[in-house]
Amino acid sequence: MAAPNPEPSTIMTSTLLLLTLLAGGCSSPPPAENGVVLSLPRPQTNAPSQEGEVVEPLVMHWLGTASFHIRAGATSILTDPFYSHHTVFRTAFRRLESNPERIQALLEDLPEPQAILIGHSHYDHIMDLAPAMRLRGWRGAQVFGSATADNLLQGYPEKHRWRFNRVTGHTGWQESTTPHLRLKALPAGHAPQIGNRLLWPKQIREPLTKPPTKAREFQAGRVLAYLIELDAGAKTHRIVFLSSTPTLHHELARQLRASSPIDVLILPVASWNKVEGYPGSLVRALDPRYIVLSHFNDLFDRRRPQRTLRFADLDGILKALQEEVSARKSPGFERIIVPDIKAALILR
Ligand SMILES: [Zn+2]
Image 1 (tube, rainbow, N blue to C red):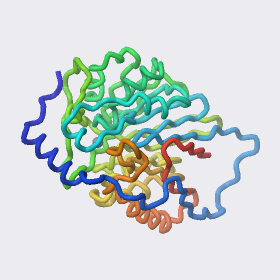
Image 2: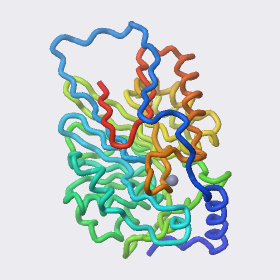
Image 3: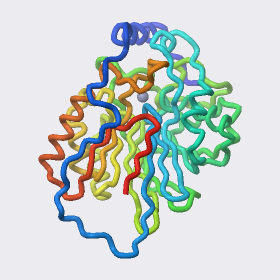
Image 4: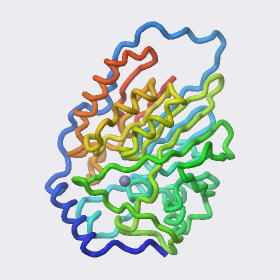
């Protein structure tokens, strides 16, 4: 049984807000050319690599919204599977349906992931997990996420295909049976999407008995950030994955500071300017080599999924980040990356 449905007035208010703010063409031309890699010169203070050292590069594919396929050597992980875009009207009023052709096109040449990480359970972070595993014939992956994510996924007939690991964000490193992979989940919070309002913020406390089909049935549950360690020969890649702009970024920065420098910091863009101090606090604490932006494409556009979400303010976050990294002059910093959907990022 799902968590109690929101009051009808809540649904209508949410719907009206969605329509008011997003209808009438959700997109604007991208303020930065997608796929452009912004580079700042790196001072020549890095130690040369050891002779004979073998390091598997990190190969990342952004698949839109907060979904990344990340691979080092034989180990692959997938985050927040969501690929089936719906119009604002459909999202507000109608059934959501996965798009098999798009799922196939995005995932067909990527290795099967051993672990799938769910940051939170809004529809745009979890709704294509079960269809993707069925369509690709995947089985045996460990899924990591909140109790809400587990209860929600119980409603799918494909649930036998994965082993779910509930994470609370309040314990240490998570058990993983995948060699060369370690995870730590941390409470992250979720910035409001519309004005100061966070849509569908509840937890789902009982397993569903059928797949959710409406956006409001995908309640967020606990929102988690992940620290990921992927061993790659002589090196361990450290990645911080955020599924949405975190309201708890100061606490995250404090907890993750001990793990710096981070190799890759994945930063959501949508609603970034509603959270004071983000993303500067995280950049200062984590000292990342690469900053990879995510969750800035228009998830309401079915035909042009790469277009930038109207209110994402990609220009604004790029400016803030460039000022931050310029001021820091970190010797390890390499690049801010605005990825193209499905373009391979090879990070060494
Ligand atoms: Zn969300």
